[in-house]
Image (cartoon, rainbow, N blue to C red; front, side, top):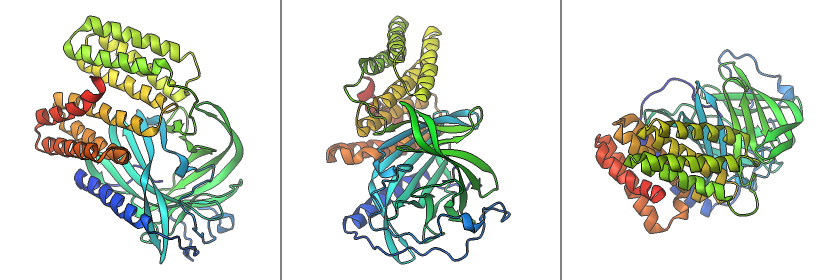
Length: 455
């Protein structure tokens, strides 16, 4: 999966939303009447190395992806090392370009039928959203299908790379059958030395993976996870990076600790826990909300009291078993909350309060269904938009509305028709006002969504 590569040519952010809408309609219609075509998918006879200099690839004798796949039940993805059709939500944390990196991966309710050399294959659609320092950086719609032998194949992606809230380019976009062949992303039973290409459209995208270890135990959100694999990935530009994939999670870690990396923080339902939501995860949201409101009113006595209660709740909760990456990030946000309240920084305190809420809702993924968490994420972003509008930051506000648009796609199917239409109208109106640089009007509309969270 190529991320953040290449030169950029500017298009419109509205075009990204339109593409998403067309995908949802066309996929839903097609899949509703779709019957599987159980025929082998042709693979190219030429398997040239797709790096820029044509060098660095493994011998074809090591390739595990040269047998044409057959897809009779492609959306039932049961491969434990890439279980995308059973993963409702995956959260990853890391560091990229020196900034705080966050990705939200969500299984969408739609599928897409892809014609590959005359054979129709139905694929699940997974939305990948990446943020650097809280700003939207990339969104991709990834298409996956499982072959009858248990291997998972990557059938393409629609990529939108953002700068200042606008689509800077769609580099990395490709589709099997149009730009290149279907590409194996996980063998059914990977073994050391196996080689396969998760992307194999030279000139568009290229990755070649070599399995270096199997039977690895990794440290997961709830403890040790046995049965993982380690791989080394060759990219189109000739660079390499190490990755791990773990049962029940799929992609688990990329890069190297101490440098740039992306690691799994939490997955739902893999990390689901029995019982009710711990009280602290609810009262932390309440406390952060009180800080937000008090800082907005300039009531620093109430803000300090609410911040102190939130810190106490966190200290109690983190005494138990907490996913390590979320523990580290929440601790940073709690410290920022204390500092900004102590210095009476109204903007900083409100932003820190929203970050605390975001991490608290992340942790609630272990106890709640995914849609209400995504609704809370949407509401939090609406609150961020209010603050960015106050700062008269058009680029940041445009980025915020992009997040609203994409998050809307995760939850619209769970809303009533009336609520879905209302949300669509609000988001469209916010975008229109920002594009006219009427930030005050955009803030007022976003405030209606925000108020549902903080009132």
